[in-house]
Amino acid sequence: MDVTVLRPDELTAADLGAWGAMQRANLALANPFLASEFARAVGHRRATARVARLSEGGRTVGFFPFERHALGSGKPIGSGFCDCQGLIHRPGLDWDPAELLRACGLALWEYDHLTAGQTPFETAGTPRARASSPVMELNGGHHAYLERLRHKVVRTARSQERRLTRDVGPLRLDFHTPDPVLLDTLIRWKSDQQQSKGRRDILSRTWFLAILRELFDLPSESCSGTLSVLRAGEAPVAMLYGLRSREVYATWFPAYDTRFAKYSPGILLHLKLAEAAAERGVVHIDMGKGTSRYKDALKTADLSVTEGYVGRHTPAAMLCRLRMASDRTAHAAISANPRIHRAAVRAVGAVDRLR
Image 1 (cartoon, one colour):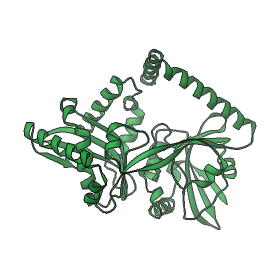
Image 2 (image 1 turned 90 degrees about the horizontal axis):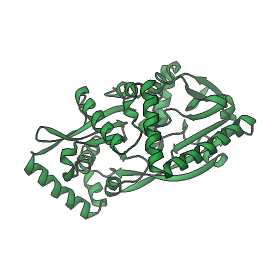
Image 3 (image 1 turned 135 degrees about the vertical axis):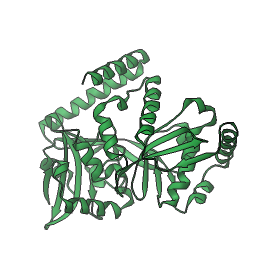
Image 4 (image 1 turned 180 degrees about the vertical axis):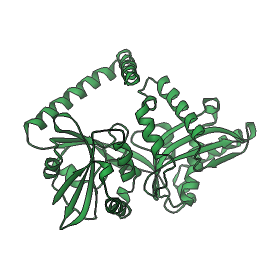
């Protein structure tokens, strides 16, 4: 197998066409985080971004988007905010992870959202944990989705909708609103939410906002930043910025106006979104790894994603493993102490602002 490493912007029109065809051939690869548009947007802001093009007999058979860091340490492209990771490939392709890493100049590749169907990586690597990525299944249409939900969830949501309609105004969902002013409002809501919970706020970083805005309203069937807005009367009560392909809507940044919190506007938005997405041919709404009250209420299935790494037998790979072990130990110690954790979040935020 021949491997050519490129910067994302060096991909040709033929490369982009082949990449999209591979995604359309496999629902497990249809997630917009795996799209070439996402890789190119990250590449415009991260100098470490690369894409390996895999060829056999002069035919392109796969693409491996990654980032290359010090000591040959590799991560998925968009590491830290990419909710689906892996190698985009033709059906039935097998590959040698060690040879791929060698061709990419990597000693080790670490992942935390490896999608299903990446058997060579999992077989050759060291999976540390499996996690669930809750999804709303829309195959069969909106009514079939509602039938899969617990009846208590649907009854409660309808009661909240009636209350919100009575108190504020009738509900309306705009599936996509290409309004930068509303996008700024969502960013403010989400930043306030993250800061109030003592979490690191990626939306405060100028370089990340540039990626988010580049993808916003992108005219692509593989990856388009979509702003869904739920209104009560004329007031936006909840919004969601997600990435959408033809078959998958990957939620990214949901938030709501806290003045309407008692009506559970986030759940109402997702239920309205399910109806609108099903009408447009979306099969899955992927709510991302992790559990929460609203995800547990809305999901009808779980996709499995893997955290771990795959490496070569080299001294550099050993150094990378030692660094990872040290990082996990430090992270566990910080997370165990709320005061230290809050101080660490503030310190990281200060460094981000200085950058």
